[in-house]
Amino acid sequence: MWASASDAISSTRALGSRHEAYEVLAALRDRIETTPWRGERGRTALRVLRAHLNFAEIAGGPLHHASERQTAEEAGVSRTTLRVVYETVLRPRGWLRRLRVGHGREGSTWYLGDGKIPGHGGPALLSRFRSTQFPPRPGT
Image (cartoon, rainbow, N blue to C red):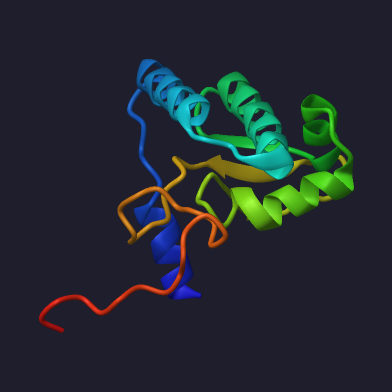
């Protein structure tokens, strides 16, 4: 649990002002719009991510609240499709992290990431787009 919490904290960014938050969100929007979203699932993931970006802009930073219902309606998808996209694309690729599950009328607390998996440096790719089998590094 401590390692998971440490990873979450180390991969979030403290924002000093509302202006800085808008700059971060503008950079995220650019990154989202220039990322290749292949196939039907990718296009659906893009719609869901745009919905979360809209919620984040209203909240004034990457930390925001959204329920499944709100997000599904905003993205124009079913809740079942939304859950599949969360589990197979957005969370594994580092775009979204659910920090707290919502209850009743309260939406979940989400953090909008930058599409990088902490500790990997580069953009996260799905295994079907890139082999998970790598040759040994020279000298190892």
